Amino acid sequence: MNLRLRLLVPTLAALHLACGRAPGDAGPCEGRLPGDLVLTELMKDPEGTDTGKEYLELSNATGAPLELDGLELFAARADGSQERRHRLVGAPVLQPGGVLALGDAPLDAPLPPHLGYSYGAALGNLPNGGGRVGVRCGGRVLDEVRYAEVGRTGAARELDGALPPDALSNDDETHFCDAREPFAEGALGSPGRPNAPCVRAPDGGEGGDGGTTCTDARGGTLREVRPPLEGDLVLTEVMANPAVVEDAAGEWVELFATRAVDLHGVTLGTEGATGGALQGVGCIAVEQGEHVLLARRAEPGLNGGLPPVRATFSQALSNTGGTLVLRAGGRVVDSMVFPPRGTGEAGVASQLPAGRLSPEDNDAPGVLCDATSSGPGGERGTPGDPNTSCAQATPDAGVGGCLDAERGVRRPPVVPGVGDLVLHELMQNPLGGDADREYVEVYVSRDVDLHGVSLANATATGRTALSAEVCLPVRAGSHLVLARERDAVLNGGLTDVDATFGFSLGNAATEGEPDRAVQLWHGELLLDEVRYRASTEGVAAQLRPAYRSASGNDALDAFCTSAAAPTYGEGGVGTPGGPNVCP
Image (cartoon, rainbow, N blue to C red):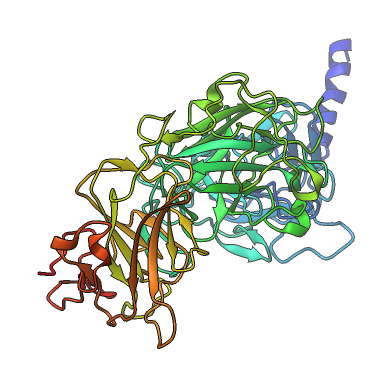
């Protein structure tokens, strides 16, 4: 035997043993080709502690049974570093078209019902934000999946069930989506079962129900989604390095809404990764002028005592800084570059200074600054509230004024005076209950902004600002509808609501009580007031055309309750948003 053959024999033997067989034994590697096994599902970010809850799923894409013993699972970071491996021993034979879930359940305990095999701690924790997993024998990779999408915490990433399991198809990350089917408490996925088809929005993005409808959180009914466009949401504050709890639980982001939209289907990611969809209740509706808190965890006991969280996100925020990107349907709604926090003080949010809330403001270099207000747990920030001034804010920081949502710039508001806004129609006693169906109509006699305007009841203790940040310009001759609820399903059929208020109008005053009243204010200036004692159920009180002024609507006979007005919906009779029919 020559030297070359002496070296070759042990090398072949070593290869045989590496695949779990002795020389001469065909074993699982014999005839195995890339694509025979396909990775079809991956749970990399379970709720709570990852250890013991992660899994990956293999599908047999051949027409014959596959022996798995001797094959090797591997997991690594996105760049291939820190690879960890596990050689399968005692794995079940995978039948043609069969699916097997393999997880990191403890080896000294019974397997959970959804798993067919445990690799214990051999692969460590799978990288959440980006990595690669695969299966091979010897040096031959049978399948590998590389991922960058963060996905939803507690939901597996599944290969689209509408596609046949294919090792080329799963190379395209857009063919995966977040699982929607629960299989255990706090966990969504279909381990060991065929995947469900991914639900896609018309533009190809992921959508919980097709991308065009969502469930209203209050009414429980389906309605059309109000998707945000560029500039409708502005990133205003970010806490990337909390001090009171670990980053994975205490990180948060704040948005400002320049228009009433839904966060259904909106993703929060980074410049290089789309990230995962925001998770909340129903449509996750936000109103114009609202400061919206997003956080990694919604539970106050886990997130450091944050105020109510509107939606959660799974994108980890780097302490070394980066670019946050909000997307809807593949479009960028807003982005913000936030500074490093790793060398700065922990527990301090980076924020836009007060008054700078346009999409351009968070793109300008040097505008973001350290928050100065004390927040939850002694940290500094204003989660869910207007931002405060910053010590290092530039003199032209634009404090004051209002945001022109159409142009995306700040400007001085056009302030209304007495007579510019006239209380024109009142529905104090709608059919079907007052809580969601009351409305007030305002007639606009001059082009003004509603910035700084508020609606109140007789005591003026329940004032509701119509627009605290955006200018909200209104045109002379228009009829504005202010309602308790924006959703037409809940408000009795009001389809075009301009703003909402949060107090009851009151139906009637009893003997000895003061009159009921509705008031419009700008700051401490009373713009208009209407007083009344009675109401007619299901019929709006309408101002007669001859009395259409701030003083004219004070007359005793200025209003009528005309049954001749059309029925606008289930709420009753009236002309919300249109001319009155009183003679």
